[in-house]
Length: 93
Image (cartoon, rainbow, N blue to C red):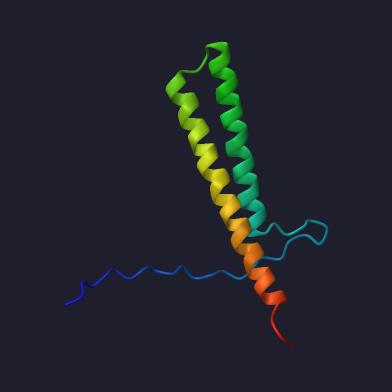
């Protein structure tokens, strides 16, 4: 017998709201990159704070590890996107 796994609820997608014509639409990948940038800047600030004696070693190391993990995730995401692009480009039409 196989165990039953709980089903995941997929949220309803709301239609895109009309933005101002001069405002660029912000895509999902751009938001991810901004979050990664913020995480890396926070890790740099924690390292600088540790060097100045304002932040404890544990906090600085945790911020550094979080930034490293986040950066590795984005690199893996980029590699997967690049691989998918290359596969599409190699399709015979």
